[in-house]
Image (cartoon, rainbow, N blue to C red; front, top):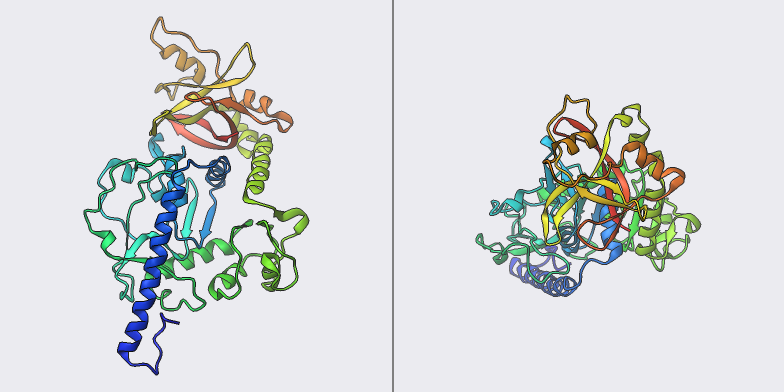
Length: 417
């Protein structure tokens, strides 16, 4: 109520109340800044690395009511890439996945524009603002909104590039919609309108809904009414240690019931996000054998590659890799290749690469083809392979068609196993 001017108070009394509210918001931001810094001292846990790759493969839309930038930092530390026009490979940054969002200051380095907002990966919608968003708090239209680029990573004390504030963004106030029942004073900005209408578009057309770490308080009228629009026939999964029961107002399941929605405790409730991730990983890895790209007639003509960061300490460069099989162990590994320009050639990718290698260099084993990949995963088997730069086992969880130098290729998307 401190936010809302009261008609029976004088203007200076309402101004004092608003100042108190601004102070509370500033304190919330200060505490969360400390918590984010502390959490960033540790690298992304295994389940979070897997969750990011799941979101990437599914092109998931994540509606979050959190202010922190931990997702952005986890993306910065990850190995997600998009293949754009001209077969250019771009690293996905945390800044690239959060939109709609305020405009950022002009790019200072190449990485700032490395991967533009794209439908090629996940989308994160910050429903209540972000620690990285700033404005003049007496702005009623949102004209002063601006965001700071997130250049930090989980598990690394140093940002990937020096984080300067040449534009003085940090001298402004944070744009955080406070945890209030009445938020009308914040929903009037143009950005809030765009965010919530974008969220509605995705809710209305959703094919599934997962609720993770959100209590779905019915007192938050805007959020609960938005979620109530979800199509009644889609599956709803709840990942929570205490989901409650389907009785009205008995935890998340009860709040869903109040909105006319149902999540089955037996089939759609997971005890934790970790359990949810494990289950989803299993579904993605075992369902690859039925992937539409593998079963098209044109798929037989394509050949198999994957994209991996260029090296252990360089997460912003990437290369194409093919899969080879070790004769002794029978396991698969990824090996870097330079794909030659021979779009009109009838040679296979394997032949073209081998023929382009300088005389006297070691010859790679035959590459795994689409047919070989289908054989390896027949019967729902998982496709594992060794990371080329570290002792880590990876697993295929998705496929996408790309065109590189005139060749139609099938790109394998992977996650840590």
